[in-house]
Image (cartoon, rainbow, N blue to C red; front, side, top):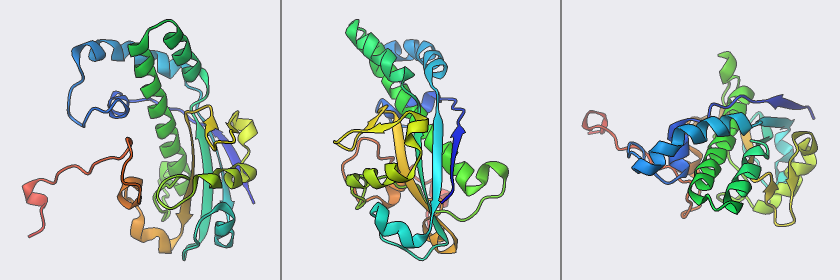
Length: 222
């Protein structure tokens, strides 16, 4: 089994932070929030220290990490973190009673972790080099039918200590702004390539669920 650790550059977009704050796409934030966003983004970008690791597994090992094997060429598991800097600063803000700024920075931390996972997924698929291979959407333990307890198996197969990420008995990760995931590789994974994880996830109630944008009338099938 080969594994690889990489540093990841994240930009932490304003739109992604607003998403994690619960603002629907296209809806402007409250004036007070908008006035704080620029400073929050700058601070989050300076504090983020995103890193990731991934490992290639044979499809026959799927059950060992809690997944049901499908017809595919391979299975890749991964782990990313935005680092602990943002979370530490959030705690400081909360202790000082600056709850609004703490909330904004926490959302920026979530956006950083999600962006890191997307960038690592693109690296795995070859998309960053313009040589994209067929891959499934990214899935994580605790979503759909994949048990959260599978975190233990993932951590046993990934160099999490090198990333500075640990796993609590509750199966939650430290730093909290970390994401573990798996992706199927190969031709048989194509039917779900390009689909949002939310499209295929069976979890009905989730604050992070992305709603599909309404299609224009010209795009509606007859």
